[in-house]
Image 1 (cartoon, rainbow, N blue to C red):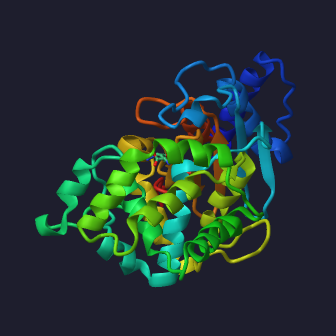
Image 2 (tube, rainbow, N blue to C red):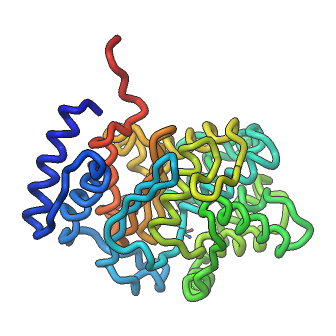
Length: 342
Ligand code: DON
């Protein structure tokens, strides 16, 4: 962003922060922190939205939980609010299992088996599966809606369910830069209430998208959705995508740089469910939301960002997360679609 617009934003950021009782330094070195602090303060008292409750454990999460993390190319983290409380990663995990399959089996594996098109339907739609049938000219799903995601999980190779799981949790660990764990209460709660996903898994098997045990695929998918993450984990995962698949904190190459654009493309098309177009229109950022309340967003070469805040809008996306990321990215010139006249 231009110096002038950054200055303008920081002035309003300072006003918001000061209004919220915060002291804010706008010294040059603290610009990023000031932008994060301002977005945090601006939405802290927002009361809109509601936790997801179709997975009973999610309804019990504190709706006031709110954390922002911004990770830069050198791994430096700017943050505000709660960075330690874990929520379940939910649909954000779909990004990393897709990355694992593209890394293992090439970019065509996903495109040919599942498709990379937005469905225009809800993420757990079985009607989308009917329309995407190969006999009707499919596949026209993508790995970020449930039928495509369960299929993606089924594509991770391994002789046993444990061997497949080791790879799935492994890729998430590499992106986050630490050993993540499943939140067992969420896993149990979703396993007890995921009849719809079980049906989708079966349907995907019936239509030959899934070629192995569909119950195993749905179970592993449910487990991956229950991985516990905090805002800093999620921002580090986003930053790993922002910087060519290399984790800026650990230096580990999680996936090859050549595979990153394909992952980001699907996030841009389908990362925020039915509101993906609206999101892209306002931010230009490849992103992914989860019903646990997290959203990750990627500004390629610039930063990775994540916000955790459980209350969701009608489309299933965290309200505070959408607003805070939009403000921060726009203030920092994060929109990769913004061009400048020569
Ligand atoms: O499959 C589900 O319903 C959840 N495990 C994940 C949902 C989610 O975050 C958004 N979309 N389907």
